[in-house]
Length: 242
Image (cartoon, rainbow, N blue to C red; front, side):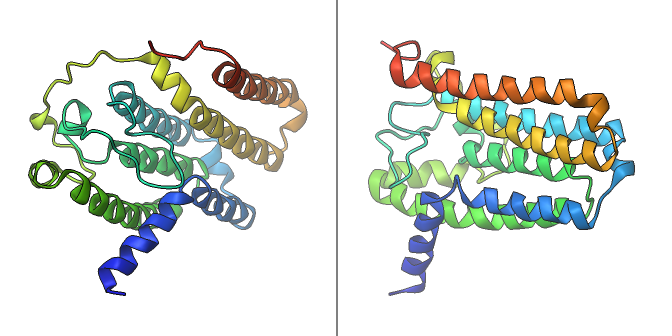
């Protein structure tokens, strides 16, 4: 097997488990918080605001991509690459992989939230390298699928850093239903991450008793939101687009 085929195979494996592998990164981050507690940074509102801002920005980037996607593209398929059309307008006219850009932005936000300064550049390097392998496999698939049309678009569109001046409007209407159906699980995961990090920080800072009602309320909201949205997706037609 050639080196290119090996890279594509590895990228496809990472693609298949791209929802689980980042969890391992944050288990490591959580363990590091035990060994490198940063109470000063946890109490610094600038860290909190920057972290939340990056997390929200990451989810907004994903929503912009998903809300105007072509059917059977930009989804959460796990087993194999799927693309029935080539997205090349809207946010895709500025950056080739907005979903992965959104993910990286969100993950870096959570790295900031740990308060461990050196963890941010480490996570940035690791996640860019990780997604670069997935992107390699994905672009091999898209090249075979769309041929010269894809190659022409790839040549003029940046990989992960948006070129805002290249924006071309997407005539397709934005669908909030599509966003809710596809993105609620990611929002629930982010809220759960926030809860776990806040719970740990509050415990270390000795504020569990004073904040227990807020923490319980946050936990209940996450559970109701996650299971409520899952029920609406699986058991109703609320998110179906005619």
